[in-house]
Each structure stands twice: as C-alpha cells, then as structure tokens.
Amino acid sequence: MNASNQGLPVIDEAVCIACGECVRVCPDRILRIDEAGRILIHGMTCMQCGHCYAVCPVQAVAAPFLDHDFSLTSSFYQADARGLPVQPAALMELLVMRRSCRCFTAEPVAESLLDDLVRAGVAAPSGTNCQPWRFLVLATRMDVAILGTATAGFYRKLNRKAAQPWLRVVLRMIGSGALQHYYDSYFETVRQGLKAWDDHGEDRLFHGATAAIVVAADTRAGCPGEDALLASQNIVLMAESMGLGSCLIGFVVEAAKRDRSITDLLGLEKHYKIYSVIALGHTDVAYKRPAGRKPADKRIIRLAGSDTSSG
View 1 (cartoon, rainbow, N blue to C red):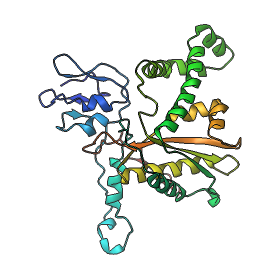
View 2: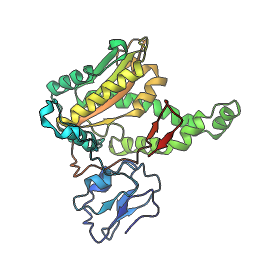
View 3: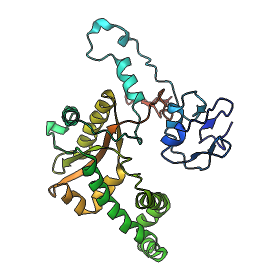
View 4: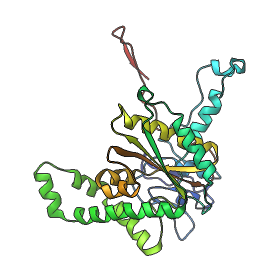
C-alpha cells in the first residue's frame, strides 16, 4: 500500500489498475502515475475530499480519515404511508453522492436547465422572507471565460505584491498579516494556475465549465450572506439531481470583494455583494460511491440541566 501518514489516501497496488481516474479528479494534484504505471502520492496537502476513493472503479483507494456511514438512525422514515414528498433515505443519498465537479465536457448547458436551477434557488428560505437574491446567469462558455479572465487579472496583481518579501514584512509590522497568509496558503497554487492558463489554456479556475450562476444578495437585508448560501445549496443539489456537475468557485468571490471592476463587469449595484459563484456543466467523471466526510463533531447540549455529553 502507498501512503505516508493517516491524512493521506491509501492505494492498494495489488488491486489498482492505474486507470488514472483518481489522478484526474484530485483537486490538490498530489497523485500521479509513474513510469512503471503505479499511482504515487507526491504531496502532503491533501484536502481529504475523498474524490479518489469515490471515483476508483475497482475500490483500490481507501480514505481511512473519513466516516463513510450515512445510514439514517431514525425509524420513522421507513413508513411510506406518511406521505412524505421525498423519502429521507433518498434525500440522504442525493446529499452524499453530490461531489464538486472539476472535470466538465464541452457540451453547453441548456438555458431551460439554468432557469430551473434559479427556480430552485428562489425556493430557499430567507430572513423575514425578504428574498434578497440576484442570480446572474452566465449561459455560455465564452461568458464564463470572460469572468475567469477578469478574476485572473486581480490575482496577477495580487501575486506581484505577494512576491515582494519587503512588502509582506512591512505589512506584518503594521499589524496586517493578510498578505503573508495569502503568500503562505495560496500564492503558489495561483501562480501555477495562471501559468497553466497562459502556457496551455488549462482552466484551473472554472475547470472548463460551460455555464455558471453568480449568487449575489442585497447587503441591506437582515442576513444576506446566509440567504445567498441557502439558495446556493438548493442550486447545487438540484444540479446533482439533473445529472449536472457543479463546483463553488471561492477564488472569484474573494476577488470580487476586493476588485470593484468584477462586480461592475456583472452589472451589480454597489449595495449588492457576491456570496457564491457556481460553475456548472455536464460532468466528465462518474463517481461510483459516496466518499464520506470527516467524523461529525456532535454535542448534545442540555440547557435544562448541568449534563453535557459528546458523541
């Protein structure tokens, strides 16, 4: 088996057929195929998403750091006579099978599907039912690429600043460690992504998605961030039910917070803020099983007494 610590996937070389699917879906790019046709782990930055485990056709990958048991413990859902619109077990299956997609085909997403995804977003709850959302639909690959180019422009400037050691030191001395944190956590990933785009046209931002929905909300609402993220969850779950792939693109959200030209490009008024950007498209990968999640930190709090239990 091939793993260096408990935080990395384990590959059973006796079972592995070196198809390369795990390499293709790994967001941290820590897997590769060597000259002998073996899958090797060559990094220590695993985000523990479990994609490699979920996609492997022969179950040669293990993710021991994840809890794979999503069976429901309550018994009421087994009674079909309750007339529930969706059986809880079926809903749980949809929840756990949904994976962030970073492998899209070039097939466009029909505008009717995008319309339905917006309808799913509008069905979300919102504070005092204010429904503060605005859904900006990028319906073509060209539109997605234009937003990607604008976002890349922001990160090119940021990387030039972060590459200056003296600037990071000066900012730390005056109490701002944000640029140093960016340099430590994201600079190299962004540098590689920009280089891949410039040299080979490889899209590591939107991953080749042919559509996107930008979810913004009116900041004058009571809880616009929560409202927008609830709508976003509805959209990605509906996309999964349609057989579409989706991926939340946080790099665009962060760029839009700091670069007004991005929100201007999208035609947003100043009192609107972008809270999520959802890449969408027809998926080019087939996950075989749910990947699991890190064990839940569940705490039962008994405010009526002094007993507090964890489990």
